[in-house]
Image (tube, rainbow over all chains, first blue to last red; front, side, top):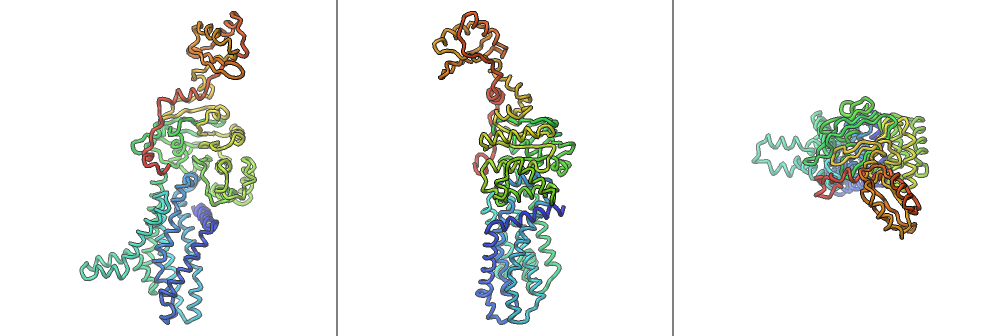
Length: 245
Length: 324
């Protein structure tokens, strides 16, 4: 089981770095992250040694960048016909789903890890709470995983990567926006409190900001992990359903 | 070794495969023939566990593809339609990936890759990315990955499609060399291929098996079976045709005029032997014949007469004309 997952994962991961695409992605991720943090997030003007301005923008960064990674996961296999090759090798469908997902998640993890100069900067400038920063990195990676799993499932529904990208980005936008103050504000005052709580609870934004706020609550972890599991389950079902079309 | 039991598959209103059964023992090369859209690839996709059949199953060396998919998949090598490969990978990396999934590691994997690269002549493109390869090399990479674990059952969907005549010849040599200890199924729409490598041919159209015979038996179904070809001087054509028309056993005469003279193809009634009568007549009438030969039958003609009443079904997605 793990043997096959690791073989597929390694093949995929090597595939990312076989073309310049991976490097372009990482550079865009770092540059955009930097611009948002230092110019939009008022990193210096706040006068606080923490990475809050950096992490605040991660949901919006992921909204665009993660669908760009996930769109090819299955759409490319279907378009190129390699899905038939992969699924007639002695491999379980779950192993293929997990192997591909893990490779993409590790890739995002690498991109995220390369943001360490931001951390070095606050370390140099002041005395940050490293626990909060570590929790925020974990939360960011988990949120990336949830978006990635959703994108992987949607990528299985089409041979067209652009379609996969747009549909994923649209759904992720809904998932993020549902918990933002702007959307909550619309509901506040007239909608029942239970509805507002439900919308917030379903939103990536709410759970992510809870973690970056410095509280690593088990419920938030379970939220992200169960989203990943559910989307990957849907991914397997969709691959099985759509592979022949 | 490979047993196909009553496979059936529908895509919406389209019946793609409708109760196909056959068995391939060791030492047989089965040619799976049929017009485009006949259900060849769909049958192979079900036999290899890629598509779930609506009914029936395939059994590979005793392992049911539906109930024990992993055990069955270990025992066959499969070249899918179009010979897909990961475009970004080099040939060597791709073969290493397949070898690892097949359970070979370290020196054993290296030995097997070296052997297969040698066998299908991939040495010169080993370190090249698959997307940069010509169609012929791509096809050979597909065959290489199917044979890397030396499987007892080999299923190849159009193994020579897109190859030049030399490469085709070479691929047929590879298939023939494997024949003694494997059960091999190849799908093709090239009749010459069936004659060249297959010990048995199944003709499928409209999702059903229409014929299951040796290539020679199939050819015998052609109206040209036992036809006699006469090469004669053009000025004698009228005289000889008139003489042949007298014979009861002659059903029709086709003439082709070329540089070497006129070739008359005398088609026998009910495909009965005709050569002796014609030879006797020629001697009696003192015709001058440059050549006389008996036809075994034409596979393409047999194929057409078997499959003609079964036009290729329109696939439902054809109307969108996007995915194909």
